Length: 65
Image (cartoon, rainbow, N blue to C red; front, side, top):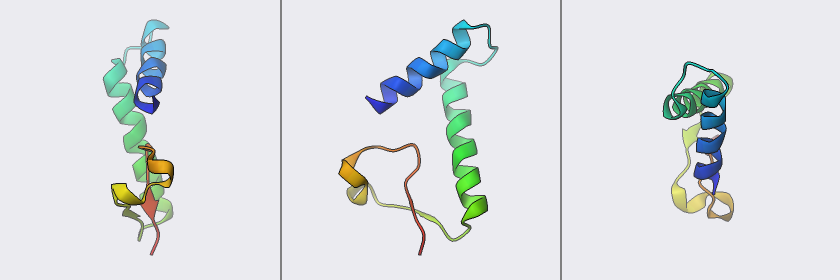
């Protein structure tokens, strides 16, 4: 459901006259999120899938040692 929502949001931006493709805008937003997390928490590591809260595939899931 999260993936569908991200695609819908990106497609809505595209329909409003944006020049970005939906897939590209979704990927760009996620890359910026990961950059922001790593900037604020340089020691953060990507957490293993089996430790995600409620087993939800979050946009970003990090652990800070």
